[in-house]
Length: 214
Image 1 (cartoon, rainbow, N blue to C red):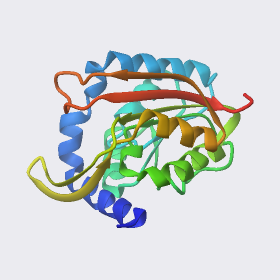
Image 2: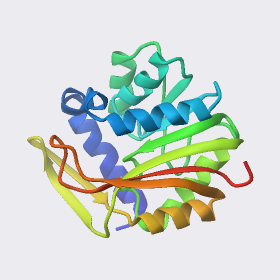
Image 3: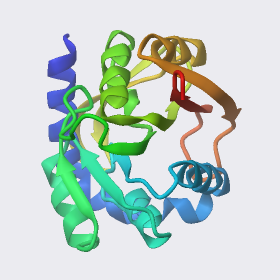
């Protein structure tokens, strides 16, 4: 099944679970100290420039950044999620868009955040997605990418009682770092953690990268 079909199924699935997702996930940063620390570090490196939250869902990470003085823009594949984010955080900026065709100008952002959004891309699509991130970043831009690590793909057809059809792709850290390098990034830090008690039992990887030559 090709990537376009996978993203279309993901879009419909997230539209379906949008309200439930907000209720269950909308306050997750309160329980994720490492995520907060990495977001704060990225915001500091952005040096007052705008930051894109790619795969923003209901907008909670975008809002967290905005509350700390960051000019944050949330972008999501799901129109249902984007509408929900606008409703919940009316002062923030949200756009509908695909990771492979970001609705942003060249060099618009000082940094990008992609927390668990690349899990809906196949390994072969990572390079194109990171190329788009590179396109919308300034020459000194930074990126924070988080994902579930491994080699499996999980097909989910039932999610919180809703009928869905979405694939979750796990990625090896080396695969992600290589795709970032191919798109013009240098990996500055990489770390792996066990799940928090309230999370699914998968190991998670965070990669902090900068535009090559920055």
